[in-house]
Length: 150
Image (cartoon, rainbow, N blue to C red; front, top):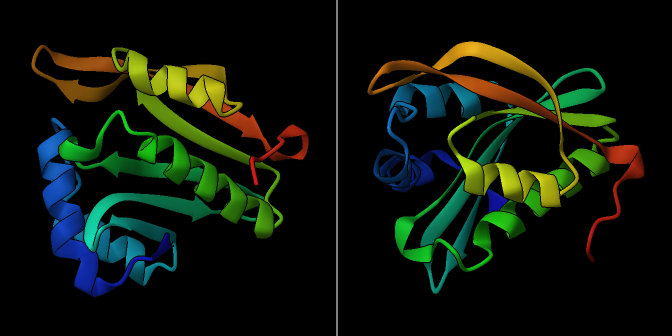
């Protein structure tokens, strides 16, 4: 895993567009890089295969996006990227990480729960979908009680 650079934006954007129904734009990714968010990528055999963007605050952070290329899904790369981002947050001495996830994304919810996230709220009609909108589950992970795999 390494920090994302502007040279990675096209590859990240391609993954995002392939795996998300309403993907981030090039502008969103460039803004994240310019804003000093914690943007990371990971490669397998020289191919960029996963990414994540964490927005730090004073003592908490929000995981804004995380993605794994379709060809690399179900191989533990999402879990590895999530764990790495939590380690980054711990290294920055942040106390908690929040995220929103589509209520229909049961695989992601299960992954987040396994990583120590719990549901803390709901955002009604937060995400666009083919029917108009769907709710987002707000989840949080308290880093002080987290045991990260080394």
